[in-house]
Length: 300
Figure 1: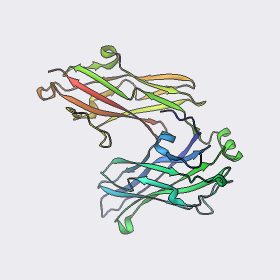
Figure 2: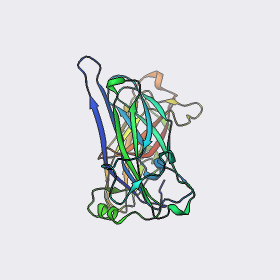
Figure 3: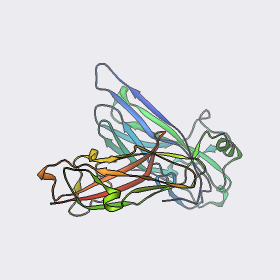
Figure 4: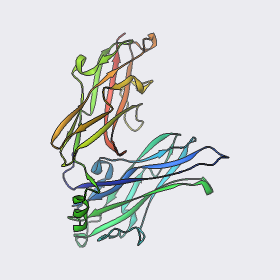
């Protein structure tokens, strides 16, 4: 979904990792960058997942499940960006869910909601808040990753424009279509080209002034999505094979991602209905909130 009500700017991600020779490897990384919102309106609530096209993802790079909690706080003087002031109240933001258990070598996603009071005195203000994802119940081994969120009630400060000019950040304005792909009569035991057989392909439209380098990854079904009746999660996402792992899309152009299905020749896979999710990410590692749902029905 394209957002036109404010600009979005992304900077580098932060990551933390630590290993102990006496214990399993523990590591945590944030699939999230500094987010800057402009022209935020008082009295409105914004879902940063929809606004930035980048979900707040926490990656467990360790060997054991971890429980992550998310909180918001005032930035320190050293963290505060030029021409921004600390958010008046960190409770303007909340995470849904507030805590999440993430399996080893997996990523969990949170929705971050920004609710700005309906106060005309806020117009023209530029605020900053810190968002932290931290492990729970790990004592001395607890890890945390921290990012900043900046938003302006109106246009951003002149210093933000300079950041854009220096290309220290990337402005995103893109669209991924379709939201869902349905494929029927898919054979087992041989390659099925989605474009040649059913004229199905993923399109990426780039409306920004910078080129996009988009990566694709198939995964099992996302439990946050409703699974249609009769479908089951695909047993192996590696059955979905992209002809190219990256697609470069120039400004004001539309790129495409072709893929094939390679379902093993086994009787148990015939006459099945499988569901999967195709995720998109920038080559820099930012995950884009533009999942494509794939529904596959195999031949009997």
